[in-house]
Image (tube, rainbow, N blue to C red):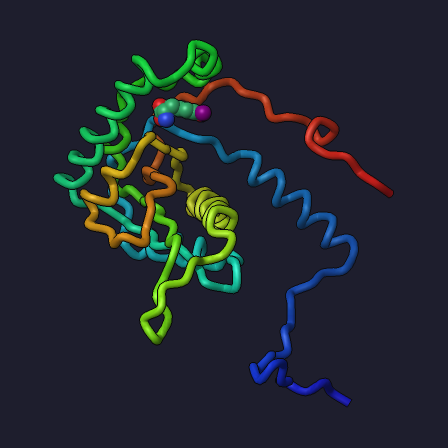
Length: 230
Ligand code: IYR
């Protein structure tokens, strides 16, 4: 007998889920192929001004928004900016904070740790990239009765969505980097975000410049990042 297409739990409808699954050989192949593909992702600062269509950005945002979240509140607002004047304002404001960071707020050790990455206070990618995707977290919301309630596991949920955002950008053959100027409250003002939202991450998105350079970094090995208990 076929299982019912839907059941009732706590008065809520639960529907039969048909996950895509593969036989053992294909499962192993898929796991390896995904790693090999994801391992080609790099944070890229040399981003070309080549246009990227709004439709592409919309689907990247939809992909990020498939992330699991605390009580399925999806506590994020993902802003996409391709207005040149607004991008310039964001660059100017970010560089003011970064100047302060590099000149006084960051420790000597921190700056030494960034030498291999080659970052500095100049953020041309904020203006050159065709799109800035700026993720805001929603720390609280109002229910139907107008009562304010806090969202759950907001940082975890939004962090996961950002990971999926990066994967979606990579999948489209585009590049980005995770930029977190600190403090970044200027984003709330410039983008006129409501009081319940806090800026979480800036991702400039576009095609890589040609040529583009990235630091010659090595990723930790499986042994370095994992411990199996079998
Ligand atoms: N937010 C600064 C500094 C910075 C900090 C870390 I940790 C990095 O991995 C990279 C940069 C900046 O964007 O330059």
